[in-house]
Length: 324
Image (cartoon, rainbow, N blue to C red; front, side, top):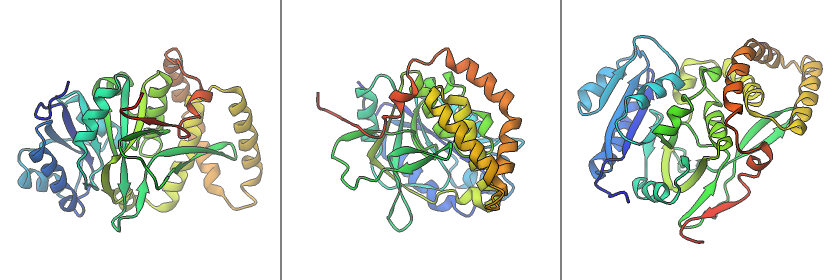
């Protein structure tokens, strides 16, 4: 039984050159700790920023534990750095552009107590105008690759915890122990995108649970920090590449591999007609990572206890809390 005033949560916030957006977001996280004894610490991981973000956090919030990387190591490794140094069993992982807009602690304690195999809980995010932004995730096969979509039902039930295909890395609760067993976000996906889908899928293949809790609500200026530093074409290339890497790294179903191979051959043969040269760059970049993918896959596959068919049903059913 978790008591509300017993510290069980560490908040970890990785950031890079976020001075412009941090003042709008950090105060909501600090208030969360001030109002909840269950939040034991806030850890901010500076990924070698050059815009004074770290200095601002240190001056404005001296109680925040500040970790400063001497070089830029990317989102995934920055998260791992913070989580390794966390003192508590459950990590609230937040992007630096997240504002907390609801009580997230009460439902998270309930989720933890009801689900002993819990790996992660994804939050419900909204844009600055209050529109639904990221919710329960579903996956759609398309031309040999996967696309993810938000499954906004519009009728999320009170006290209902939903299955989701993955927990969003920018706003999620995660078990520190299980996260470290999985060795954190895979470096295959560096610098960003699909690393959260990958770690969620790896966790579920081990039999751990990933849920979406619509009671945990945040405001998300999605990818603002990424897009400040990266051109749109580069982002598109990385997204496409990482979709390939996700498939090659995690999927074992012969039927899905047949569809993937057929779809990829079609795209390889026809993308030049549509002028989609980003696809070829993405494919070449993905091929270069095959040795690393094979190495990580060989480690994971001996621990799989769920198959792709079981996991692809996720997003179609809901787990109702408090009911048999």
